[in-house]
Image (cartoon, rainbow, N blue to C red; front, side):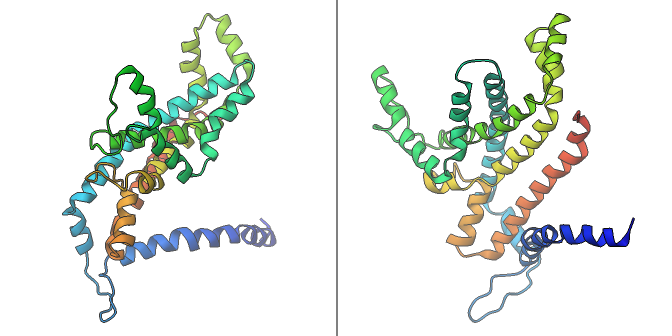
Length: 290
């Protein structure tokens, strides 16, 4: 290859590389470094404490509650959002009147600001005069305090996340479906395949690259969820809806313990790196790229 062409290539990617180093790699390394030090004060500089912050994490019950909540949050929101997105994409990809309006309606929650979505669902969940309470009261059903009860707070937040994300993932599946030749469906029909057989044996394998992309994004979104928690529950009641990123936010900005917050951030980075490793080493091998 011409050396001049190599330099031109490096110059073209240099801005992206510099931004990636400045805003991704350097903060990650700096966070790891600060997690081994204590907090600096006005009269005492930061000191190396080794794994003391990680030891405190092991003994922190709020961390384990947030981790457990986050696992359940991901286990429910990720498959539910993906399944709902596929169903909506199949529905609006069919020949039916008004499908442009339906696509807009499905995608609308995605374009709403996170704080606006949280306030909308606060009205839905409000006891006595909220929308859900108003719908159930004529039936003689007394709804629980959705956000104030430990048994329902996390589930209520899961519903909000699915409602917000399914429409966004639907766009990717709709784009993928429109790239699949209709002749495949015609051939399957001629062979006597049912709709379910056509979906599971033809469509779903062809949608696997999109599913992998959506899956990774859904998992990342499940880990970095914080806006709705701050507005709707603040992690309560009794940390029943606290997630990892909200716990980091509290430790770093409410309790002013940046060293411990750095250690918690390292754990989140390890979780995300593990997700990426599984994606590149296992899931990509099962995808059928056209």
